[in-house]
Image (cartoon, rainbow, N blue to C red; front, side):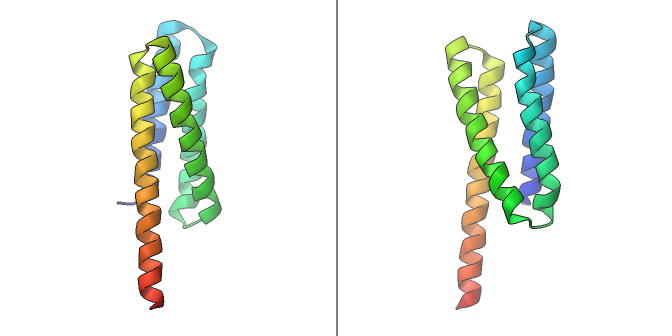
Length: 111
């Protein structure tokens, strides 16, 4: 599967759940998740064109976001934040699996 599609799906989930959280709670900190989602959506297009720098930035941002969502979700006991954390962690794992697959393909091609 193309990694940029996973990135866009993760961005969509973060934007949708973050906006929903903002309207239910009224807290401006709920807009952090949509901001991260917009950054990931913006980075998805260079990743689609095989831009390695954008891919590495997106992976780092996804890891930081997953950790942040898990900590915040469990501290507050908020299921919406935990759902965002699980989905973001899944996207991070898919990114790593794609990187490992590409590395193996490059090594096999070099032989």
